[in-house]
Image (cartoon, rainbow, N blue to C red; front, side, top):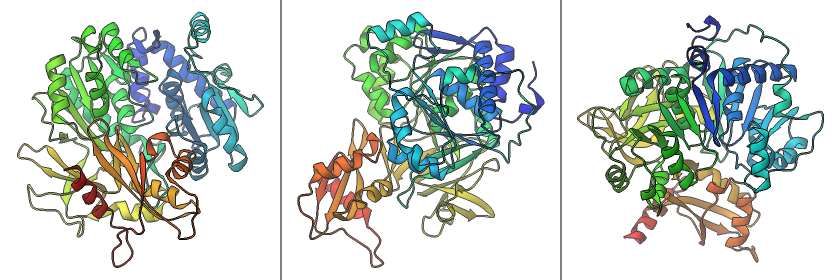
Length: 547
């Protein structure tokens, strides 16, 4: 029952062990269909062999452009198992965003849904893509279930133009010709993934992640936080959050795949489907964002669902309002614990499970993550209990962005002889050693748990021929956390350009959650003496309007 020495310390090593220890245990429940660990393990091996057969090489970059589905899990583990690099992106990205990431990460292979194929097809002539693997949400379901879904129009289907370079996911599964070759992977040096996050220069930046960095915080979660609370081989976890996000991916691996537990995987966060899944599968653990918990609480039918199986509910991605925590605890009889982290350093803090969590704190730092509160100007540590910017480091993580030396120098700084990542979030340590959230950097906007770079949206607006300047801010909103508002300055000779034109321009180039909700036009924007945009002044002005 011991782990294969080749896979020790890799992101898929724990999964391999679960496949051996719990072969008959259900690994995934998806659209009512169950996949055992033995079956899922075989699919991973077959897909890994198929990837090698079609020309994917170790260290090659493979972009995952999928919603939550078994294919995402299979592809993620298979890509890493052959020593290749996963590049996960949102399934609602536009071709504009897709083209940038494919070129920047030097991606040669894309795995996408059939409903997204049109965007991939659009970028093929402008990239170095060599192959596209296409799947549908129902591809791995039984034929009768697929037929039922198509008959009643329950499953979206996209038009695909098949060719030698465009092949189906199931065809790749069928290309396996024996055992995988013995590939050596260096957990500390070899990349496991490149995840893209907002940049301060207007372009998304790729965060490079090694196997050791991901494994280290997952080990901390299981050994120090979940401990005896998470029962191995007997627990059912609900996953609604998208797996392309570092929070959901890490939580799924730690609670389910590394412990032989069952993950109920939902492709779309539909409130009634979530509540019914909790009831039907007796879910005891779940992860969400504040807006998800709020939506569930506001569902008129929530009282009709039996939620008594829930034991441990976690929330991340944004500040949890005290009112949401109190209402959830009254309704379900359990609190909402918090998790905090970032793409650059993985999971950083977790609420202890032996006490009622406070909505003001995001928990204690994990053992492998070292946190200091610094003065944002000098980067010197502030006195104990003082407020400052949170900086995080770990001996296990890589401390750079992919091909972004200037962004790397801006975000990763030397402190006390070590390199720390500057989170941009203002925090303080309380008396119990937990980290209390105070304020977020003005460049980062949180909408329904998504981190949105204000600079990225501003850059898209300023690409419009009629725009001379733009400032994007987050306006506080109880339901979503923050709503995006853009303040725009047009060129003097601009004619006939209105907010509808600019919103349409943004929708063609940005994923939907990054598009401003409304646009205000002004004659000028506040700037410093050196010409730097004073975003804080506009944010403070908007806050005064809300009083």
